[in-house]
Length: 150
Length: 420
Image (cartoon, rainbow over all chains, first blue to last red):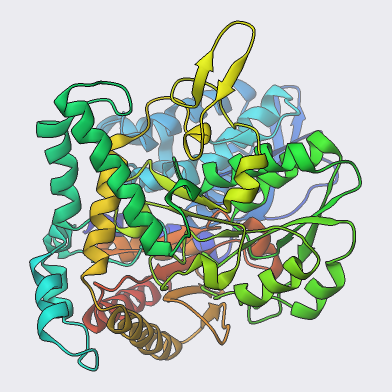
């Protein structure tokens, strides 16, 4: 498989076409906005956090296929996770995107999100894939600041 | 250079540009990217450099390096003569009246900041208005916003129509007794629109309002004559003009430059310094504090020499042919929409798809060896005007070919295969 096919796998194209949890959430008790100044991609992540558990998560925004699919996959993965689990996953995804996880560790560390590992071959696109994660991280921290990929 | 010489000496203007010969002057055009021949269509961001420019830079550092305007030794005098020689070449290139009206800066951005801070802070006050257009690069917006905050002036914006052309009636309406400065682009980097600058300048000058033109995109594509245009300030960057990065030019009419205070203080811009009082140097040195980018200036001179050997009519008609050919080719692609359809247009094509983001287009094109710019092109208000988050932009130089346009089209078809 070429690096390009690896990047734009069918699962990613599918999440781009029909993103999951793509909606505003009125009952959210945490919300954060993320922005990638390089390309103008922006995302808003909504969280319903109860007793340290992510009961519900959704997102809105505009961006490229990689940023949209990454946000969609992220919301599917984080639903039901504890805050601590989410933070651990954030760290592992970050390592995967920057090429610090090898193939064997990957499955264990990030599960289904390993589908995004092709991004590490495209340094210009790492920020697209990490935008939603930076944003959920700042939502978990309760930060009011705009999350950026810088 | 050899090819350029042959072209100018052996071919009549009616014969087209010998692109294959010109391409040999640019070593980078022979390289491959991701195993594919490089198709460089990002000339709006920066242009490639002919071997003569690369040689001028390397010769300067290997054989001529010395500081200018200071030493009495051989090399200093040599470097000074080479640097000042470049200033003369630039003066002729834009047909400025005097060489002391040519100020070396880092680039167009610094030139605009210089005028905003030196002219603007001195002569503008609260309630005054500055006019820019809706198709400016951020570098011709933000310096004026900073000035507005400093002096309490107000920024007014000439709207553009759906083709990306200035709405001249609105410009006439915006020009009032409050208008104290006009700064517009000569060619839009995001849309390719060629602005009718002579008319823009004439309308402002009738009212005694000075006009600055951002020529970053125009200098590489149009025959420039600042006297014919009639502007007060004109700025461009060396690196888009086949020269080095980090060097650019501000032309200013000496009557205005004489009345403006220095932009930065330091060496070279003074004639006498005591702790009681400092006397500033004459033009252009008053605006050139510190050791400049000497190699860059000399390299830019070499680029201008190179361009001088090309037949400009052939260059312009070749670029217009590429634009027409590429426009027709891209419009055959299903779902592709071109942003920027002005009647007077330079070799820039910005385009979007409804269902594919520009970044995904750019990544896939890159895998095919096709280099384009994707994003907002430092012109976010333009993106907002057309309601798109980003575009993909192919921008041509005279060394591009119809074959490269075909390669672009083929690569875009691969994008559509991936995204269905």
